[in-house]
Picture 1: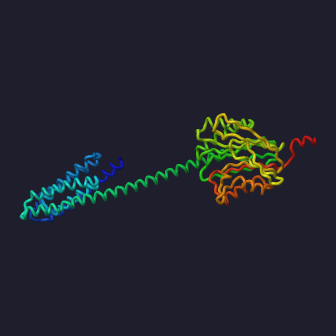
Picture 2: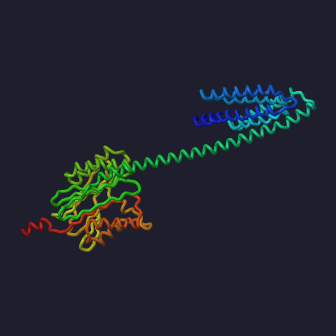
Picture 3: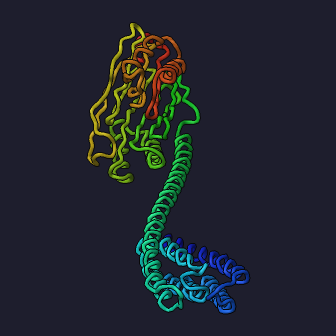
Length: 438
């Protein structure tokens, strides 16, 4: 409604400017025109009155917003001025007779077809009235017939001007709507860019600044974000002697909400690192239930690797199974435990399992952004990850991570964040064997 009123007010200003031009033209014609029935002095008086009238409209528009009936007042004023001007300058033979068409066009543009038809009806009545009261040496019936024959043109002009105005108005509305939509899209993209930057900063701050250095365990990890920041995180806690705990978390959702959820999980994980694995998952689950929206959840894989005993303790909360590749013959194993994703149920239960490893064996933790990456129309899958690790199992942990992401970057399209953590036993004997020798 405000936009419509603004357009009407703009047109009122345009009409004021147009009247100045018309009045100046009539003034010039009044000095040049002479003829029977042309009352020059009276015409000049009407022009002077028109200047006063238009000046009053100008002041009114400057100091007040025109009301809903303003157009009716200006239409009546314009018709009165044109009628007096035509009457005093020769009646239907007046050179200013066509000014009625301008009034009709202005009404049609301002108020649509209905307004134009109303103005056409009023001007037609006035034209006929002028003819009836104007002296003429010709046949009165002939003059009236000539006047009446011009009446349809008034209505045709009203219809044409009203329809054209309507089409132009619709086109203008569509253009403005397109501009608003473009601006809205630009603001939304700017908001998403800012959110992406914030989420990236939060996610980067949560990742370990450096990887643990554990005798007998080679460790490497990397997270590659997709077009939008998701909720991937890896973390470590460790005993400087021979034990490391590694965790990979994948929070549902994108952007800042996912990054904030990761931040809370990171703090809770740091506080529960001394608990056994099922107890740690239970603690993180309670945190998710209590501090995140109901529609948000997280999957998690967590393990501890003891280089002295070569034992891997692991537990999962709805996460991808851990991949174990044996150094001896490249055999692949998937290790997991049952457990709901974090944040689904407050009373979720979690279990741990144990796997015995040998020197050179590789353990891989990863998120579904790796296995669901599309490579030539097919998912990369855990098989693709296992193939790369098995083929390069003699390489370092960092080389294995590099090989995985080199393949993903070269041949695959990742629609989600991709995270890979590699733990590799580098040698040594189990503590039990060392004790037997002693």
